[in-house]
Length: 255
Ligand code: MG
Image 1 (tube, rainbow, N blue to C red):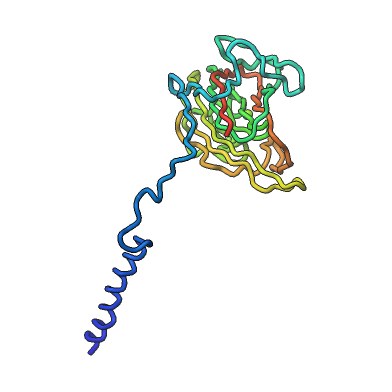
Image 2 (cartoon, rainbow, N blue to C red; image 1 turned 180 degrees about the vertical axis):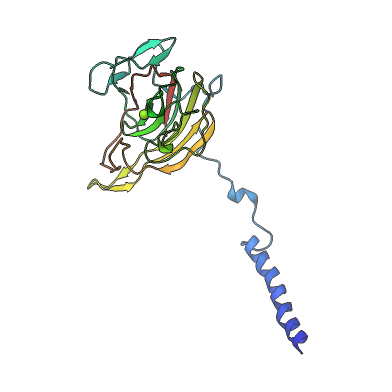
């Protein structure tokens, strides 16, 4: 008796399921719709010429540093930028202070290469080659020789400083050149200044994902807890800590 009941229950369900599946797969019925219905032909994405080598600027990039002089840069205090230019590289100088681009940016793709010289072993923790790349002058992607240098993990290279540790330690030993490729989405604010959407950041260090669409919680600070204040576009800032940290091949694409 039980078996008979089960058959009656299962059979119609099976038949119905197949019919329902056919319906779900081809909502337009028979024959199924033409594949062209789901094709998009415009607008056509603009052509961008890739750089010659890996990490080289593509044709639509804005070069932030011309490799020759500091035009395009200024001190964060408003005066002229006082870093050195050597071998087509920007070099942090003692007491020169942070520098920033004169141009301001919102959402960007950013490429930056940096190098920390070999420092004596007594230089440890945050004192080992500290610098930083600040998006909109406020949000720091840490630069540090943390290849083999214990420190707080949200202060390692690849960290969003004091907010998010890198997913992995993808550094090369000093004095290797390291590359950041960053996708940055600026925060959005309501007219009354309150936060509508936090900044978001994805960071590749030497081609390896270290920040995956992290929602930045506010300006990065050494002591203070982050707290957003409304702002518009901002410069790209490089942090000075008197470590002779070098930068080269800095370019952005506006998104
Ligand atoms: Mg730093």
